[in-house]
Amino acid sequence: MTAPSTAPAPPSRGGRWIQQWDPEDETFWKETGEKVARRNLIFSVLSEHIGFSIWTMWSVLVLFMGPEYGLTPADKFLLTSMVTLVGAVVRVPYTFAVAIFGGRNWTIVSAALLLVPTVAAFTVMEPGTSFNTFLLVGLLAGIGGGNFASSMTNINAFFPLRKKGWALGLNAGGGNIGVPVLQLAGLAVIGASGGPRVLLGIYIPFIVVAAVLAALFMDNIENVKNDTGAAKDAAKDAHTWIMSFLYIGTFGSFIGYSFAFGQVLTNQFGRTPLEAAYVTFIGPLLGSLIRPFGGWLADKYGGAKITLYNYVGMGAATAVLIAASMEKSLALFTVAFVVLFVLTGLGNGSTYKMIPGIFQTKAVAKGLDGEAAAAYGRRLSGASMGLIGAVGALGGVGINLAFRQSFLSYGSGTGAFVAFLAFYAACFVVTWAVYLRRSASRSQATSSASEAKPQLSYAEV
Image (tube, rainbow, N blue to C red; front, side, top):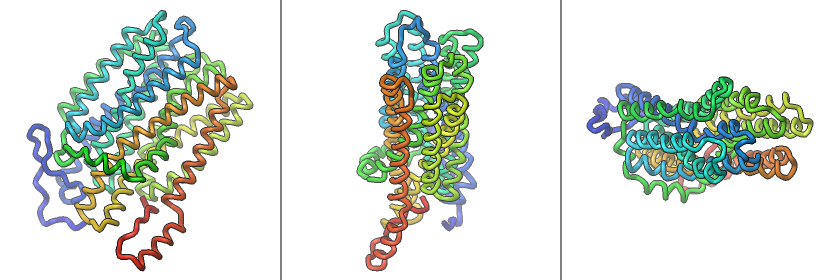
């Protein structure tokens, strides 16, 4: 894009609302936009990080809940499944909230709301509490899953297309790290013979700090305000649902395994909560750290290509898990599970990079260019991210329910892993057929010679 002779006026900071925002303008980006975008990214990551920790709190709390709590393994898998479900569902309204209230304003509110499930869990966490009470309080923790959707929608608007893969990967990866950080905190508490209330108490002041810092240092962008109609357009687009399916395979796996890994180790391999806690954080940590790298690879080589190869790796790792589960090899099982976590993180970064690229491609196909194409892409990709994130998180529900049924039926997780392998194969086929199939590209090239309407090619998204 050719830079104008003068940079756009600096953004207005009155009331923390930015009136002008054009990150695709290179002059604006270098002189004003980059600094503001990075500042918002930092504090968005902090809030999302705490949100992930609260959402996945019960994956650690159930390890504290020994026989004196009266819960069966099936009860615990059901509990974590329902927490995951709420986290998936609330992602849709959280996405709309950014458009209605502004990214900064909603970050403050969503961070402060995390006090509700944390204080509630602190109050009821003791033997003798009924399973229904634990289930109700666990459902409240699901609101932490919504922070991801609002954060990604907000940050998507701050960065230019050429930077989105890295920025969204960093934002999401920093949030995802909330899972292993929570598990490490749980390990420290268990190792120090502390109770679950100690772990909950640690997070209460951090929630307050995240809300205060968002109020002090973040901004709202005016031109993404009050555009909830974009969600309807995104919901009508087939690519929103195709990418949702693919995101089930990557993020759904990440969050589902994050909840289930410790329980599988304790129930299938007889590990104590402390022994399980020593290894459960490793997979989520590496999966979180590599997510920005997945976005970077997608920026460089194309998100569809990285996603396709990633599903090959996920399928191979799952096949090894099936073999390790059947042979009851704890060492091989643990290594393969950690590798699978890494691949889910890599795929998370590459799939999310695909989203803005897809809608930018559609904008060009409509005959748009410059800021008009960028605005169209931001509008629909921002709205679709909430829907894709919500549907993708439902994969975590499916994983925990699959493990629950597998343990009820076979006494191990082997049956669940077979189902996961079949699903990853389906994701591979969909990625190839929709975004990389050469025959589709040749067909488009042929038809473009006889049609004036531009044709879509997604090979580089």
